[in-house]
Image 1: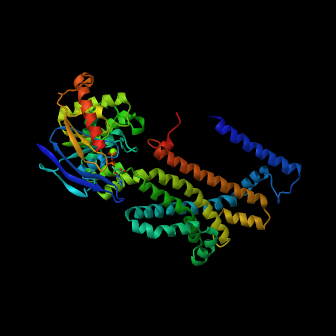
Image 2 (image 1 turned 30 degrees about the horizontal axis):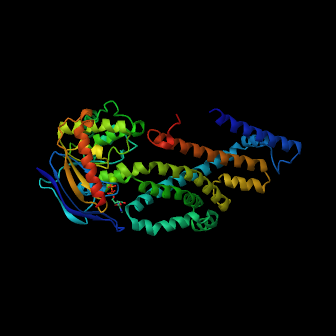
Image 3 (image 1 turned 60 degrees about the vertical axis):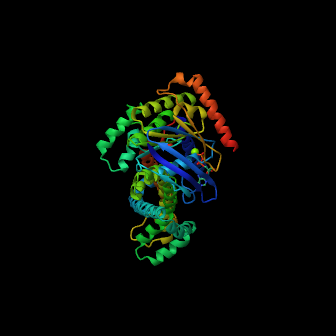
Length: 257
Length: 246
Ligand SMILES: Nc1ncnc2c1ncn2[C@@H]1O[C@H](COP(=O)(O)OP(=O)(O)O)[C@@H](O)[C@H]1O
Ligand SMILES: [Mg+2]
């Protein structure tokens, strides 16, 4: 049990030590590869620039995720109501999903005046599909016999949706949400890269670009670390949400006794 | 008194499979009837037609006294995993718009009726297969239906649990005398439980013969080991072979 936590931590520490040791032993200049200690120091010293940038990126990520949930779930509900709507719209949702965001981002940024809005749209585009497809699958994966039971007792379509389809779809939706959380962050970062310095407020990706131009490589690494940490935090948070909402009944949330 | 009259009912599915080919059956108020037939002969289809969950392709289903409240028990417990035992049993009442306090009181009563008092707050995953089936029966009985349709409800359970549930089901039936239609592919189960057995032929299914089991209730283990029981089983078994050969 403890090995599950100890082993990766030890491995991480070992890799960091190796990295620091190599950088020192080979006297690699910090503009090529800064050691982890220097990166940590930069993280502290440049906190005044990095923290606001992190907040900007996180805000876009969060807004995109909320929009992805709203649109994804609404579309999924619409699809479950009408086979025709699903047949006519689903292929386009897939096209949006498979088109690389870096390819569309410049267009969106050119078309939309407000850079923040265009960043939001890009992040949303990347994030909404897993929620849509998972929720559609969940709404459809309802036990046939339970559907019969609801019909037997004369339940309306609305009641069946609220009391049967939505709870049955919840584990699927939460699975999609966990994937989308990470994707929203990736979408936000990619869009920031494409947008460059366009915005008034600059996110972490812009800080990375800027540090690259100015050869402030340690700061670049520090920003990178922050993005990774943000991604991990989002994942853990959504995993927790998922666990808390399913722990009473779903197999995926059961502890292994 | 006649509760349901099934006449020449056929059912053809969209893929061309004909599940039922002219099945006829009378079901009397308050009787315990078993429908016995090989797997795939259309027993489930027949139950769904009686329950009104599907329409016959041909033939009629009449209710001389009007259509009663119906309870349905599936082969699997078919419980909602996200809610408690009490919530599952109260579902039919909820769907009929009954107030929470009232429906939960009646659900608790129904749970006690199947011997599950104290498990109201348990989730389905915390229950054994037999207990889940009891919850499923309690849910079907919570509306006090005059007709209880059961589709091989104990087929997936082990022998010992099945026997216990058979006895308890009979006790419930003797107490309230709802009309019971019990689908099974087990000769022994059908003879032990019912007053009358309708034997179905292989697909496309229809009722080939009927058989009365005049033994008195309550039926206990003693009945299950009697020569009378064995004789009825032999007879039912012979009729089943005949129906399958036809
Ligand atoms: N929805 C359906 N569509 C097509 N075929 C079906 C459907 N439901 C049942 N069948 C077929 O009809 C036949 C009878 O099914 P069923 O009534 O479930 O039999 P039983 O309950 O006696 O085992 C089977 O061959 C089955 O494959
Ligand atoms: Mg069946």
